[in-house]
Image 1 (cartoon, rainbow over the protein chains, first blue to last red):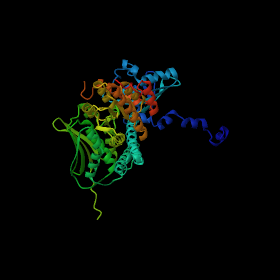
Image 2 (tube, rainbow over the protein chains, first blue to last red):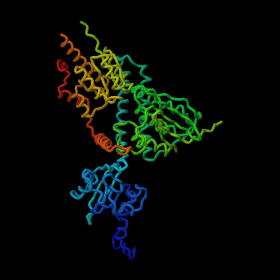
Image 3 (tube, rainbow over the protein chains, first blue to last red):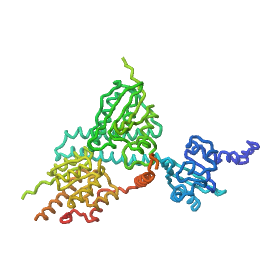
Image 4 (cartoon, chains in turn yellow, green, purple):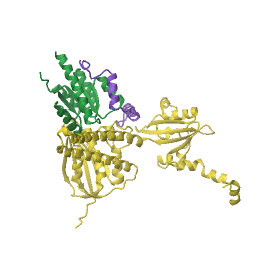
Length: 370
Length: 134
Length: 51
């Protein structure tokens, strides 16, 4: 369609103007699913997109306008007026460096970790473009927490899975080799190995699907005792390697209840893992289940007491990926429990009594089919 | 003169791997004098048995294999430690070999390969020991 | 210092965390490991293993 044809069809409205409206920066920024904002030459935020504002609880633009990113994120170095760039620590800040880089090179791209005054660390990838006029910058901020955590988790997952696969493959080679003198007796071991492999892969798949919010829980009749035993069996080798005892206590709950078995096992397994990794040689980890007041509580006890910092952060988005840890993380487990199982997670930790992590779910008893 | 049996300690936290390697070792006529599934027990077993060879994973509970390697060699500089692991990153491999591991074998090698490598290792060790003895 | 966190400890953990996260491991195959071993002078020949 040419300009002349358009003019004749839409009297008084120029196509350039119509496109200009659709191409406005504001419209584009609000569609972007990452945080976008504009700062002036003093690092003060002048405008921001919907995603940016919703990250702070859907606050109005006025509440962030005129503040620096550091102030808005409660960076511990953003003290006093002037904020970003005023502390000696700012020189090492990825965000600050990205702005400088954008001025020098036309584009600034850095990763940035902001330590808040409350002891959180927020991980971002920042991208900065100098504004065409006015001396400010257009900035993009991408939350890296999930990506980082998932990367470490998957590294650990691939290690475990390839380790197991190597073992199973080797056992199959022994079966194939007539000189090895081994055959039928390897069958249960191979089966066990392959089952473990399938379980691990399924677990990661469930986790990824849950992360995306795509998971559709499948509620069915589940035996609480069977869940406790399955989790105990899953960690038996690891516990034995650590010289720990894992005990399944008597179940004081209905024989069956309704929930998503896979998610329950994943989430409760995370609590068991934490307890096992926190315990020391000779200690006992106890798995329990009890129904009370319309709820069913799955809990794990170990004799250790949580230190103050763990108590404060265990269910929060941890600022570290906790080294090459294998677990999905208590934070993620809690999210899954709340979002999909409609449950709550918590812990009690006392010097004399040790620590009990619990997962409480609504108790929906399965009606008899007869 | 009949050569004595080669005595081996095996350390891995994965039951399938331990079974596999144990089978390979026994098929070669070597003796598994001890097995451990964590790093702390590995050191204890070494002290107790002083084996000809210790085959050790890296990712172990309680204490990782690279730390165990360092501690064993500190106490027993002549120890023959072979890393048997899935960890294949260049930094870890270099570090373990530089620390004094006599070999570094990846678990995803075919069984025949692992067998061959062990045979060569044991042949070297035993002939060296005979030389030292004479 | 707040009971909730120790800044120094946090910084140490973050440093370690960054090391782990940013690690881009170069993975070797057995042949390359053998070559490295040879290069580092740990050949499987007589005498080399003697202490």
